[in-house]
Image (cartoon, rainbow over the protein chains, first blue to last red):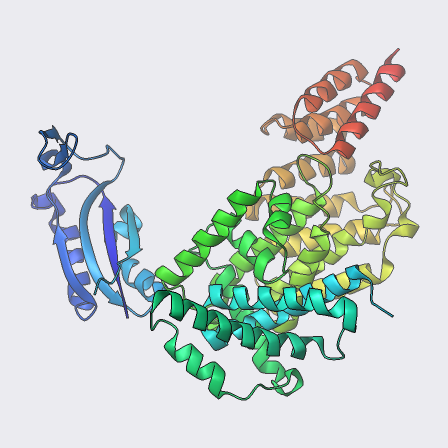
Length: 115
Length: 415
């Protein structure tokens, strides 16, 4: 068993808005269908609520913040799922059930198992 | 008598690739298996020129590679003090070393299929699939692969390392896809084989490939895939296409290495046996598929039309045009569009060909094709201009010389 992080890239919407209710329901259904595999997950607020943090020089140096996401992209990072899967093909099969897979994109990356 | 070094090197390379697939399964680690096979190959290259090639080269290499794998595991454990290869070591030392002929053929074939489908996994980028296939299935060195793929040796080595890291870290499974999944997995494998063949058959820049017969390697892979999956229509069609194209190779260059175009080729030099076999395989593939013909079947059918014609003039251009129309709708590509334009010019008239060309993006080949069509209408000055454009872009040395000769010819004819 390996852990994978499925990063959800989709339209940069407010997932609490009424227009998103239907699609949010699809994500909820995904979570129910794959409950055995999902170890953690979160839906993120839109990128307008994001803050990029950098520290100048070394630890303890001046903290500089910027408003907005790290990168302005067509699709934004809007959520993630940490899943257990036997191998990459199983992880892909799980990720392919996410609405973002057909409305945007899902990045699937293996997690380093730190002992 | 000592065998020539070339024979030894070739035997080592071919037999080495055959044992790699099984060793990967035995040790469960692509990198470890490759290193072990590499060391076994080196041992063979050192010993065989002196002792002669053994009667069972594969068995010799298998035994040696397993011993090398054990050595590597022991070295790594001593150095890193890790239990990573614990189970593999146990398995290797415990199992009897089985002579190659006692390992069932089906097991070897399964291992090879596993290796092919892993190398050509959709999660790897197309160039990475090609590089991995050349390394593990053809036994080419990173330097040779770099020559084939028109890149540098360090870039190729990096690509291979990253590929193995991804296979290991992301756990790309080492298995043959179930029968139901074959239709979606075969296109990636066939794509690798086909792109490999075209890179050898119509390379874009530079001299002929780096001392490797790329087309022969691609055909080897196509034969292997067809042998392993004889009932699948797509591999059958790919093999048909490669054979039908390769059949014309003996007539393609003259004694000085200069290009001879299809209309000028001495058709008696075409490989008739390869043509027969190719047509048989194409029919077999069409019988097995029943749906609309796929891109490989269509390209093979076009090649078959050319191959069965006694001359350029008696070629069934109407049929070829019909096949190109289907090909362009199923799998549009610059090559297919250009082919269709030429077929239209032959089946109908030059104006039809030029009209189709006018909608296509420019490229050196585009300009060269346009030049030939214009020349047919005796528009020689324009043809000269088009060839001038063609010569501005990248091409092989043989293509360049051919276009320069045509340019001179049109210039002389115009005056």
